[in-house]
Length: 131
Image 1 (cartoon, rainbow, N blue to C red):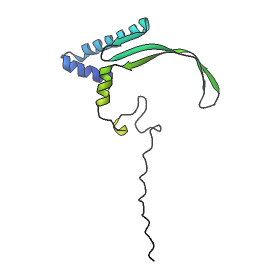
Image 2 (cartoon, rainbow, N blue to C red):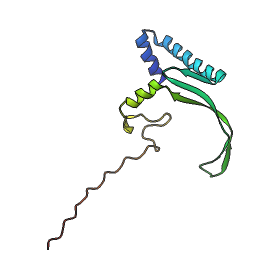
Image 3 (tube, one colour):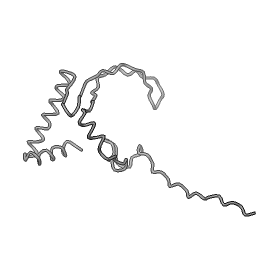
Image 4 (tube, rainbow, N blue to C red):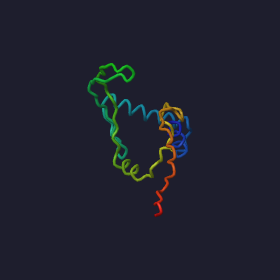
């Protein structure tokens, strides 16, 4: 789901224009970001907790060259879902991999997707030799 789809859904339910709804949705996202920057944590009851955590510096390896690379410490945003979200997601039907869309930034049918499994050849049962 995209922000545009969220705006469309909310505007229909609230009977507001999509333009006004888009502005309100953006204000909400901006408020979340501003709170994370200033306080480092925002808790939305029944939804979840966004928190800024600092990753430690580490040594990594460039996959192309194999050379060692120092990765500096950095701030990352983590999300821990709330109880209600956890329960509702746990109860939903399992979505088969094929029905999910491609990951962001990947065109459908890209090389990173797993190839389709080849059908297994039919098995022949051993027939006992007649004596």
